[in-house]
Image (cartoon, rainbow over all chains, first blue to last red; front, top):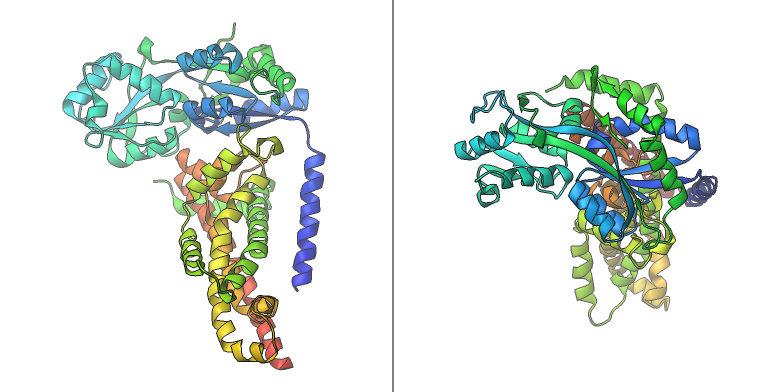
Length: 271
Length: 237
């Protein structure tokens, strides 16, 4: 019996080895949870793969972690949504050039009971101020992601100091967008989320969109090729092809045609 | 909350109808974890047995350490293996990050102490039982290791199963070093984490039920095999 197990194992090892050698060319894209959880990448990537034969391997983490992974050389392309952090990434020499890809917007979601009475507003700063004054539960990503950075910029525009209240009404989950929405649902908290993740989220339950449409809630996505001068192993040619496709007509059309329940989630805006 | 029964039936239908994507995920889970357990057994069993019979200063400390390592936090192991395999890490040139091999490595680190510690316990008891015989045959302590391991093989199946249980159920390490890449490194546990974060709680639960079912099936299969082997052994005796 032991001999059989060993034999089976060797065969399995052999299979793994052949699989690896027959592998199609691929690139690793460090991206954010919103592009994956919303289903966008699953929808547009087969088109690129069919056109070029290049397999796109997506690692979906928060923007902060995606950038750190890219700095470590663990990705060929970065597709994230925090313009200041992306520009710093390029300025520090880790990325070649940053391109706008698409945008959508953030929305303030909260419990239907709306204890801070912000429903229907279009001023996000006034709404956050009201939440802070009511000391109503607020769930923050707290994970240095693009959404978290955007949330912190918005809090900076208020007089409130939410992090001083951390652990009381202000709760930092340190998790992804979906996980944080689950938490917000569980504790009846307000939460800032990108619209795409919200739209595709399956556990809305007692939550609804309360504040939207403020220009400050604009959410821009950018794409950057990791700099081969810093990391010579970067698959620059294949990565550049992916970027060219994404900001070219085919990619932009694919992004625009992705709809969930009849609603468009991302709006292409490459130059 | 969504209707669990409906989602569970849908997930079961995917399994039974041979949904290629789901089956690929299940098979990758099994492949990664079985490999990890096999490698861990090759390292952990001789190590545990040697520690059981050898006598040297610091042995007690090593045993305590090994027992403590059974409780290694997967997320820490994942981070350590990431730092080793990252392009900026010492083993970056191997290009193993975000591959099933990286996941196997992380699970080996988690499972080896479990198998080694449980083996040590089993072999120590057996060595005591056999000590006079072995001494009269003039077998040295360390060279008795293969004999002891062979005689304890049925008891050691439990150690393997404990290791397998740890490996197949673990998510913290494999999601960091594997990256949960669709069709490449996505396994049962990372799929469950992903579906949970999408808010598809019922689907996640249904996948969880399937994972438990697989764990039960593997355990039952191995237990039956070892039981049969035991009965055969008795018949021959």
